[in-house]
Image (cartoon, rainbow, N blue to C red; front, side, top):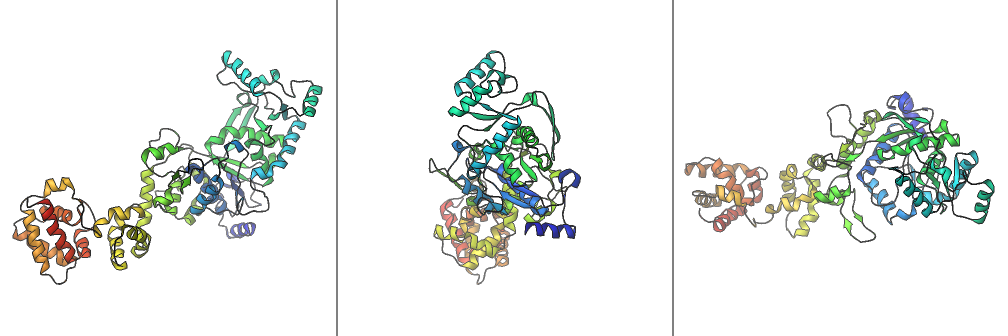
Length: 536
């Protein structure tokens, strides 16, 4: 199905290959992209953005999008994290073609279930001389690091220099190695990093990245517990799952030279995927990498949906629970590090699919501006029809115990839609439509509640009681007549009038608000305000 979709798009000429010679090595088959998180906790916004960018490119090119769970580090496994990842991305509208939750032709898609296949690849590297057995104990490794620190080495490494003094199959006699393996001595398999080679890696976003292997250590590929490390499993799975493009966060850029060398060691250079490393998400002030503490510090959501810590039972509300729209969240994330080439900011998912380009992804970090996210949500909220918004806020109305009609609630939504940022703001911001003011803004009282304002409002209440039908026009006309009779200007009473009706300094169009409240309510609120605040 995916390949057929890709062929049809190619025939129609609708594939946007984004600088074809630079991004796609092989246009003869549809691309395969993957999102491969580790279930070590709730999904960071950077992870959601990575999944989004992979999804956009997969859909744009008619390719396949795969969800693979990389759970090789069982010590960091967190119960519930995998399902949280799946649910978070589903809420965002990010859909997969294959994956741990739906199967596919290249499964299983959970690395812990692929455990039996990795040993043969690690052993193959040893046989080729690209890796070796290392029998060092934790104590011996610590002693090596201490010696190196004592000699002035800031970052001790197990590498081409230090390996000769350690206990491994490169430094020990062959019979000793056979004896240890036969006796079942614990070991790991390490990659044999070339001693002094200049390695050039092409990154779609960053161009050529040049690294000397002298700066790299002999990473562990296969652990003593029989599990592969991220590096080995990642490369093997990408090969076996025919992944053509690896789009991931900048934090994985230092690992890429090793991955390139692994492809070379296996003889898989021709099928090596193209790499693209996304810029970091930065704190709102741009000072450092974004972390959950930034959300906690600002009292704002951090995850897409709510997360319950399995150890403490504590639940942290996500954007979904806080009332954000998934399309607003996705729109916001898409513009973190990518731009469409013009000043537009509002995009549907379909438009993002059409426009997305790795060439327009920046190298530099992107600030995670919570206020900008709120702005996006506000724009989407304003597009919702009042009747639909009324359905959304109805649970808040019922929870507050407010008795109202559907028509009245819809009109409140029409008046207040422009002023809301979140659907969840409704009950707090619109309380005065359903209840008399519980308090009055003290600054407005001090500034505006002075003689002859109270007496004018008593006269206004008397005049309104003689009005049979009160729309916004009639209310404004009666109000203006009271202003003229008192020899005042309309502006001298407007703010105090709003205060009497709502208790607040701001709100929707005043006379429309009064008309919606109704004559009897407006009269009662005027008299109550004079009673509560005095005659000035």
